[in-house]
Length: 496
Image 1 (spheres, rainbow, N blue to C red):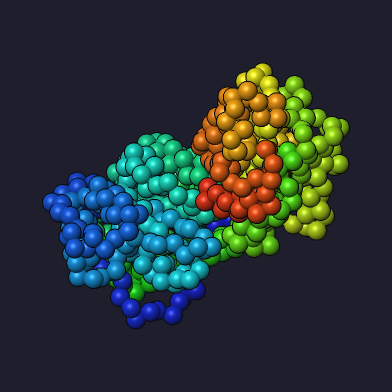
Image 2: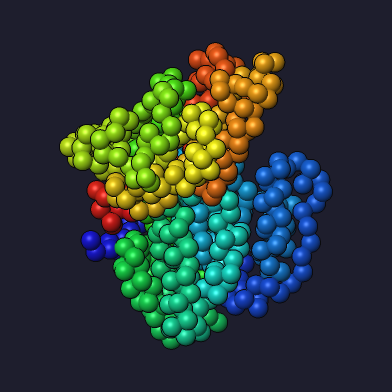
């Protein structure tokens, strides 16, 4: 489907609140990397640092390393004066989507209005830099993305690339776009606003040139565009500073309103999908365990979370797959894509009701049986990954998805310390199986919850309260990992 270009031109009611910097400061903002790096750096006062959480201190260190000699001293001055800034540490409100804004000083000017407009609806973060040209974006993007999950990312590069040759701009912007797509966030391009003749940044036709290159790329990738250029063009005389690429406070309120509306519109699209999760395993993977997982998913996604659960006592991993291929008629029968498996039945019901779906994550509590065979444990990782690969192939899942593993253990009674036997399993064998599961849960995009020390009903099985505790922990872990849904076969590409 063709890309949809979004233009918001409705004039918003302007807030009387000022932005985080004054109009005269906008006029003097740097428009080259040399200016950004110029100046000296100091540090946040110890008295201020002492009041910060560990996470906030980490953020302050990132800012110190990335804001540069122009912006960092100004940021410190604002902090000492008690003023809010676009780069303030954001303490997320649980349950709200996380949005990251990447861009230059124009996007910086928009950040505070966007944050204010979306207060209580979205956690709005800003990249820890005035992001400058695409060359810097390629080098610094991973730092800006950080370690957290993003539901939506807006990005722009243009004014600082006014002197970049077309092919270089296209190449670097493609690299940046590809990396952003790997985050599983909804990606939204915000194009470059006009630069008036007489401005230091003015190069005839530069904004139009970079916008055209970017528009073609975004259309190819089916990434939506927020057209700030067209949105603000009729109002330049009112909102843009004289002979300057920057805007006055009212101008940033106007631009921020356009960006905020776009963010809400695209988040709404994402929220309309049902996230389908699967939870399975051996006899420990009982309904109470799955019910607690479902509760945690519903806290994050409401009624748009659907957990498909299947557990089968005594089933080794080879009972779920055979020769690296998921069976279509085996006794577990949850993955049969021909319509008889539990997962396919759930998907069929969604589609019959006209609902789009995306695969959100995979929960696994299995391995007790496999600990009885050295060969089974040696093959476990390859077999497990083969099963996941088959799931992706059969159900048209394009991207990776979070995997949360329960790490098995046995009874901690005195007899369990006997190296000879635990229901036919040696201590060394159980520990080997635990190592395999921990390794699987330590891979990128994965997590694990260890059952060691949890109350048990017998040598292998957790008590009912422990199952509930484990399910809640695994559901929380999946949400923390970002349980961002992957694209499924029935989702229109434009809605990605």
